[in-house]
Length: 101
Image (cartoon, rainbow, N blue to C red; front, side):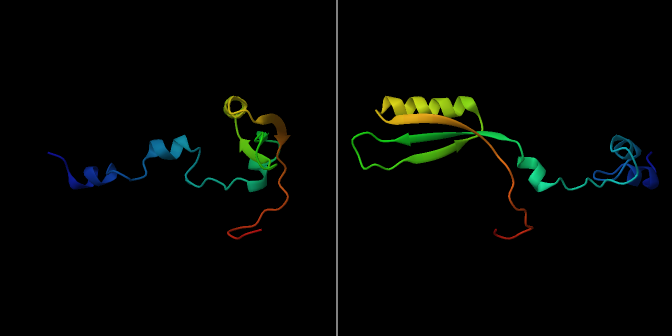
C-alpha cells in the first residue's frame, strides 16, 4: 500500500532532489545568453551567382555550412551560371529586445 504523501513527493513534473543537484543548486534558472555573443565571430558562406545569358542579376544566398554552400555552387554551375563562394564572419551591430532594428 502506497501512502498519499509518498505519491505526491515523486509525481510527474515535480522538482526532485536529483533535478536540483543536476543543475548545481536549488534554483532551476538558466541565464539568458548574450544575443550578440551568439553570432559574433560565426562563419557563414555566401554563394554569389549570376545566370548566364539572362538579365544581369546577381543572387546571394547565405549558408551555415561549407558543404551545403558547395552543393549550391555545383548546382548553379550545372545550370550554366557563374557562382562563387565567399567566406564571411558575422559581427553583431545592434541588439534590441522584441523589436525591429
